[in-house]
Image 1 (cartoon, helix red, strand yellow):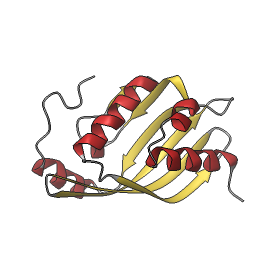
Image 2 (image 1 turned 45 degrees about the vertical axis):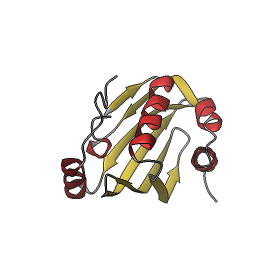
Image 3 (image 1 turned 45 degrees about the horizontal axis):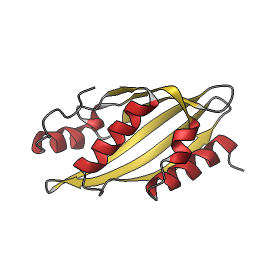
Length: 141
């Protein structure tokens, strides 16, 4: 049986993929922190729920809505969810193909407090970002 925190994450993620940000927004604390590994290029850190959704919008715009995340494995605990995610997308004819470990931390009420990503395919990521021209101001906070 799947842990309820994994189920909530899957449901919120499915809504986000369908274009509905509200379930994710409702599960994130206002002071949510997102810390990305190198896969996110210049978007390494966001602090606050508003900053996180700003990042997500810029990310999807850069990828022209081709970015996808497939949850390969998920394990839930009362205070965290650990996921292995396969991320793909295309920018400027370049293919982004990465597996990442996501560590989602939760408070006692089950709200998301932080997300840390750890990329598994560093060589692919370095080649991808070396071939992509970023828009001016990308990653600025």
